[in-house]
Image 1 (spheres, rainbow, N blue to C red):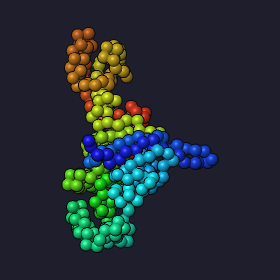
Image 2: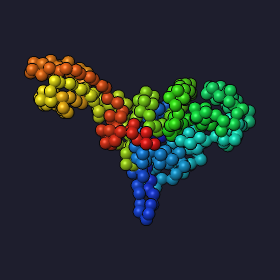
Image 3: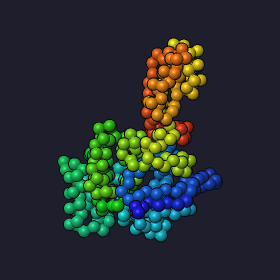
Image 4: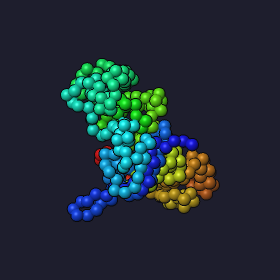
Length: 317
């Protein structure tokens, strides 16, 4: 049986605002197996960060329980912190400190011996390609370099579980790709479990074995990215006709929606259905002038579940 790295049941957090209780997280149940990379998606204000802060013991839950990396978040928060790494949204390195010194200090915080800390810091500096900046102050680094330092700080004590909260937000595409190359390589080498929150759908789609979607304080979907796309979104097929009249007649036949001379259809296996539709419509005297097929995306899933686009949420963030 696969070991569970995170198990949460009924996790709840309420705040008081202007004399009223506000439920930020409402009875969340979730499980993450050892070695998994799970993406945690949701619109702004959905409760993702609050959930992560409870799982990392930075915020006590109002109700519910969770066991993280073998320790109970209520009864043994120190045990949780010893076994996890956490990379938040802000840069965690001291701006005026040298990169190498920050890593040494972080190792000391975890009770690591000097020799072990220096060896581990050297290992991370090498694997994350920080050698050329190891003796520079953190404030002098580029955005991508700072985030790699954050990853090194989170990994200094060889955690079993790494929480990454929007790790690549604000980075240019090259720095973002470079950062993920390092994270994927480290995970391959160490088998570290990763719990990721992100607004970048390509990260979740390409990297995560499982995707959870949260909205209004609840987990509303939990499956692999391909399964979610197939079950909740479907392929998007667009058909163009010579007139709005033909488009309306075609929409009635294929179960789509017409807008002017264009028909859109959302269906599973749309790529297979498209040739059949074209033949059937031609037999009915409705000639298709152009056709396109687009497989579903995680943003389509998100839009179906929440009525909002995660891409727009990411841009707003």
